[in-house]
Amino acid sequence: MYKRIKREDIFKGRIIDVKVDTVILPNGREAEREVVFHNDASAIVAEDEQGRLIFVRQYRHPIEKEIIEIPAGICEPGEDPKVCALRELEEETSYKAGKIEHLTSFQTSAGFSNEVIHIYLCSELTKGSYNFDEDEFLTDCRYSLEEAVNMIFSGKITDSKTIIGILCYKEYLRKR
Image (cartoon, rainbow, N blue to C red; front, side):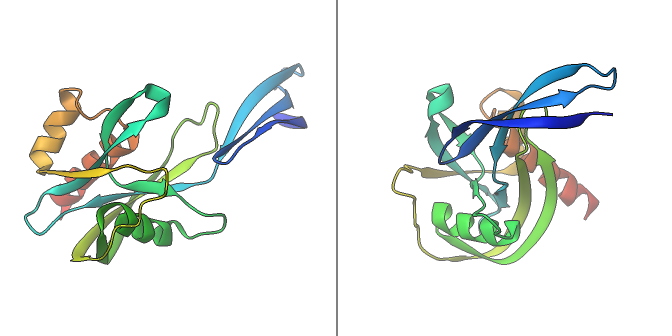
């Protein structure tokens, strides 16, 4: 049985907090575990009126390149992930969803972070308005489901939430 006996704050940031926990291991020894704390996030698989999936292309500094992703964003403290998904969809794509369904939730990297991403399918889209964050520079792009799946396996889509969202959506359609 693992038991945390001490927690030390290392860094408190705008997006993440880092702590070091001292834990007792099942064998009775102590060990340190570095933990990144991050609010939950929501991501959206959205299909436009022509049946294409809506993606955003944006620069991601940690990997120093632009990538293709499904729209997504961090939940505000206490915010319902579904509300976050609807907000982020409009902010990043200018669309409002008439219908929203939960596809899946997953831990992004349970080995060092507590972050959970909730993926929703948004449909019955109507035009709203863009509302990018001041440090966000996005362009939208659209691909068919078949093109998106091919982009996963050709290495053009590498973002984990996007891969999970596309494949969950494909399975959702298969079961329908």
